[in-house]
Amino acid sequence: MAKQQAGRSDRLRAALRARPYLPTGGGRIEAIDLARGIAIGLMILSHGVSGLLGIRQVPDWGMVPIHLITKFSSSLFILVFGIALAVAFLPHADAEDWPRRRMKLWLRALVVLFWYKILTVVEMLPLYQPQDIVDTLLYRRFPIWVEILGFYAIALLWVPLILPVWKRAPLWGRLASPVLMALLAYLLGRYSVFGDNEPLQALLIEHDDHYTWGQLSRGPLVLVGLLIGEAVLRCYWKPDLRWRLVKMLAGAGGVLLLTFFALAAPALGEQLMAVARNVGKHPPELMFMLFSVGGALVILALALLGGERLASWLRPITLVGTDALKAFIFHIVAIFLVMRYLFEMWQVFSYPQVLGISLALIVVTGLWIRLTTWIKVKS
Image (tube, rainbow, N blue to C red; front, side):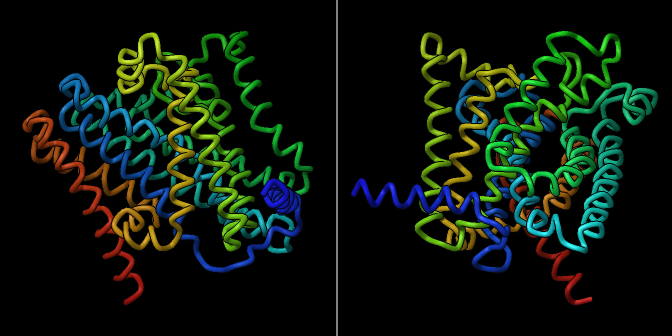
């Protein structure tokens, strides 16, 4: 048994070092769509409750465990972002047509940036004065619910530049890169190199007064996603290697969660409530990240374990994950423009009712994506 386990470990390590980056199977990996769909679904649940009711109105039983679980969303979303880039683009990073593919990612960045600005107006329209909206559009301040799109728009500008270097780098260099980026973010924050330039600090490493996702503070998760994406490319279509990868991801996630609970043990209830209320989310702090990343890795492991069969069973969630941008646009417009602004549904319903509306919105978002995809195919 020990020799068999060692043999599997050797095969997995060999797979991680192997060249070229070519999958042994083919087609779209629906497990990734499922993981992305879960991340977006949890995000819709969180946005629906906070956008229609407000966090302060949520009862304790809604904060823990329901709203607590949504904290897996952001880390899972960023990890899957890196995984998807690795699966779809990393195999072609040294090909002759790479400039065309790189331009495709940059054009995607412009599309995401466009919708980030449009949805900023949609989010702020029911809540703020026109001058506040203009200041936000000019990066003098930042929105809350749609700010994650701003992170992805900028990330899609620099990630294509590193993919060819990443592909040529040795394994130890790729493994060290998330640690080095996190260390850089820590040093920049500790020594206050930004002065009074709060927007720049917020965009790079985050700021206490702004709800942003820093490129350097969250970038390590993108790089970890690239590493996982490499492993998915080489292991997903080989059952023994995929099982090994699933155990590694679940084990890593379990260690992070156990570390969180061990550190929080003296005041577990208070710590769980703090995480549910986003304490330590922006800028990222140890306890929040242990919980968020740990849960994200466990969910990712379960999605890969279930594969296409689980993705089929959870088809509405998988549909949401097939087009993240379309799902994001639809739920923000539905919550803030339609329900909150046009129908004045702010704090009209109780928490259980808002929770039901948010859950229904996840399904409706999946149906919207299915409908628009069908129309596109038919036309």
